[in-house]
Image (tube, rainbow, N blue to C red):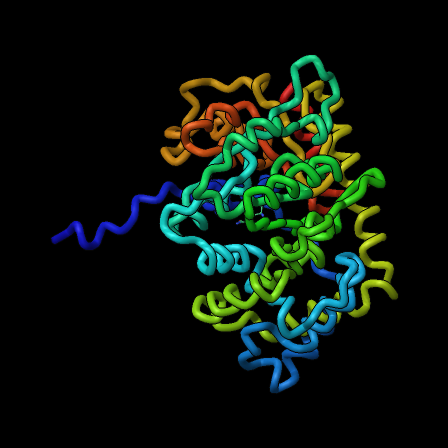
Length: 411
Ligand code: GLN
């Protein structure tokens, strides 16, 4: 019957709706979080070299290429206060997303619950439900209205709500710090409270730390895996794409105890078998030479300048926004942006929250694209995100300055 050919009724994802391909070609793309500049030449040179090496054009070990696992051990070991074992405690994945998906494949049984703070990076939801899991949402409470210049730290957790969200079926809690889309850098105290709960209820912690190299204002990036007793129950997610301006490479990694890495390796082996070989070599070169190039220090300075230029534009415009302490995202309150109800919105946008229409209107009329934040809420809570739109400032200064100027036309 035709029913057979219907497939699952999945809503179209926000990245496809606001893809540059659907927007005018002169629209400045501050939507999906990817850079409009290349990785440094010394890293792309390493990619070219790998492509000219026979072995690096073929399958890698499903755990990841030995050179990359060794580079991860050497670069991150001290950040985890551990002598990481390259055979059992590091797993290279096809981007951070596939790594997280593989953890869910490995650990979720039908009906297991996964706690995530809301708003949440949108991929978590289908990654959990596709594997039979049930997402459970705990709000990050937005800054109160009387804070005139809120920062991401003003998005807060009610720990009674977090505790109340735990049930006998809770298996995993996702802790995304620095946080997409809020930019929140979880404090040590917050992480200690989460850790205490994880211990009390025997939960696995998925620490999505793909923006670990983007923490501003000398704030501290605390890895929950390093808190007392947490190594054994935490898997930490990393990303070459975020680290080296190479989001299309799809190279990421997981760091954690053998008890988590081993079943996840079995899952990833069946999903992708192994990750992109030549670009694993290039990512290894990036980590090996990062210190001598002072790469992460310089990159952070550049991002801090990008952030400051962009939020200056929002100050000039007179809108409320959340100053991010980490990531390359800024949430803006778009409730003051007016648009005609009869604007020719496409169907993909009409069926969704007000923020979808605001983003569409700003992209078409002002020439700057952004991402509607209700997408980062579950269906039931979408209205909570409707007033926010997210800009990505991982763009060169010329683009950011041009976007800053265009946005003044919203006045
Ligand atoms: N992490 C990117 C962002 O939030 C998007 C990744 C994706 O498209 N799935 O913009």
